[in-house]
Amino acid sequence: MLRPERVSDVERDRALTALREGVAQGRLSQDTYLRRMELALVARHAGELAALTDDLRSERRWSRAVFGGVSAVSGFTERLRRAWRGERLPKLLLPGHRDGQPLRIGRDPGNGLRLNHETVSRVHAELVHQSGLWVLRDLGSTNGTTVNGRRVVGSAVVRDGDQVGFGHLVYQLTSG
Image (cartoon, rainbow, N blue to C red; front, top):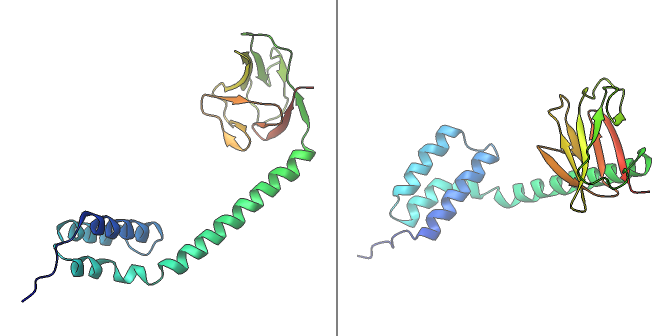
């Protein structure tokens, strides 16, 4: 009598990946995932692994195609929106190269660049020229600072043409 071959690490990893994808797609509950994961880790034969993932494999190609299509369309619309807004954004002129001297940005009258808008903090951010690069640093603002739509955590290098946001105000950086 032939005994089934033991499960390889590669087969076990494939099964665990299928289970993780099943949870991510909402096709398995967390409890079901944990129970099946434990069984996958102790499975001895390929048939045992197949029984744990067979119900997930049937829609896998279809769901990947759908999720991939949705991702591509949403990415395109975001790029289109950014390009459309980029042409219409007010320009923010980068100051002259003052190495080490920051340009403070915010609502407070003492800032080098005063932005009088309710979503801008009193001392919102600062822009400094260091070692040939422009660095934008958020100073703990309430509504955040963004560069090209991504929130700045700490600081970020900015360049001519980047879109920078302070609260709900968005500008396009230009060097002249």
